[in-house]
Length: 188
Picture 1 (cartoon, one colour):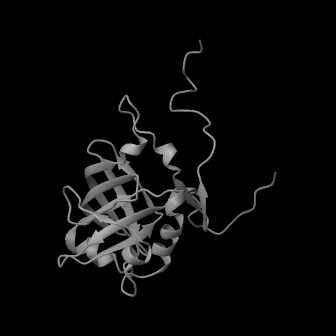
Picture 2: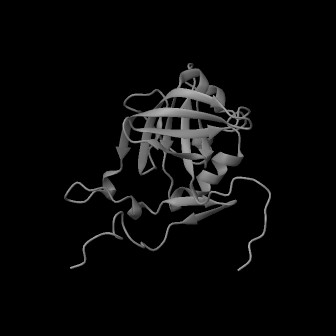
């Protein structure tokens, strides 16, 4: 198999496609789809999202220093795409996508009720990188849908049918191939 030199760019795929809910100081809210999101630290729990400064939600995050990352599913794929291509300055995405804002515990931005996981975040730092600003944030609270909890208190996100974004397309996650540590696990 031959390798072809390709123009430099971001080819780190697949990525989680998440819905980020935001609010401004006046209480106006919006939802933005972000594929450039990820875990950056365990202790303290932190994540990062990258947002273009010209996006409608950018000023809300910058103004309040808060947002909620809402994980997406097969059932939310249409809303995930819509919230990424439509601007909140033109449409009410909550209403158009029939999504339900739910009160957060810590931040003023609402959670999306239909999401299986809501991660409330407080911005600790903004890195201006060029086309995007990276919002580094500490996780302030997490909510999980009890429909995916088992009798032992374990959470099973895979049952929610999470989706990923890969080079312009959305995909459902498929077959389980292993689990953390299985390569060194003792065989019985």
